[in-house]
Image 1 (spheres, rainbow, N blue to C red):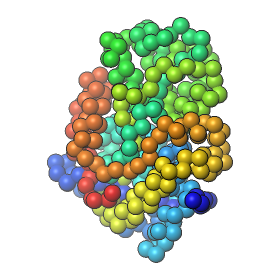
Image 2 (image 1 turned 90 degrees about the vertical axis):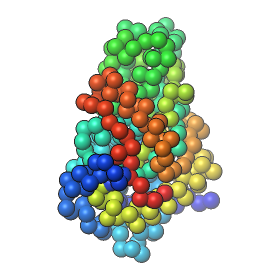
Image 3 (image 1 turned 180 degrees about the horizontal axis):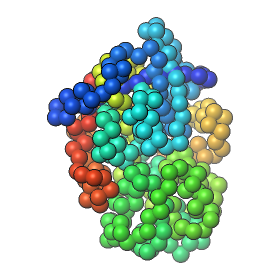
Image 4 (image 1 turned 180 degrees about the vertical axis):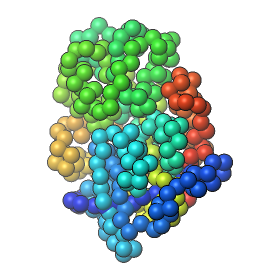
Length: 327
């Protein structure tokens, strides 16, 4: 099957809290401009994610053209920067990791969950140098470990430490913002272990003398979530349904054609095909509707962050789930 490419797509904007407690307040506080139908959908994406694959097909632009909606694609280094752009109204729609979702809700940014991706536990993990004396999670006690504050790596690290009988306070976290900063700290020899997510995790595995200490298996679903501002999502539900319909098609294609995914995305992302092949072989593609089970999964992450006072107060994740039958 041919996987068409496109050079400049456009985006859609949307976000809305689930009907119920807190939804009315969020809608009332949303900017008035967000409550009108968008003619240009501004989509935020990160490297090697399902939106990135959809961008590569060029099919979303074709599907939205009859409705007079164009698309703009804006790449971000990480989910925290993307969620800030969403909250500021700089983009309309985008994706971020489970950890970023908790932090953005706890900070009162007013973003709503619209849908989720399939679990991807192998796509997040912690590396140590190949000749490191660290052989188990317990060996991280007292060591400097790189993670991102509110990132999926942080949650996986917390869960791994708990499973090994340690507390988060037993290690010395070193917080970074970008994957490149993480790799730089690793190569400097100043830290014992680093946490990364694909494709950067796969990139470090291919390019450095590293050993995978642990990944998210049994610790976290490591889901990606799709977000928007509530008022935008309500006003542009039809556009978003088209987005998710095309995203599902792209995901189905990617799941059935991993080799073609690598061949298509490697030049687009300027990433070594070996890196994308490693990341692709451990991934299951698929966008799914939000469910009570997914809410419970995400609530576990939120509760851990609240207990460690990484967020200012406990939150109820389901209050930020918006059910518009988009998927």
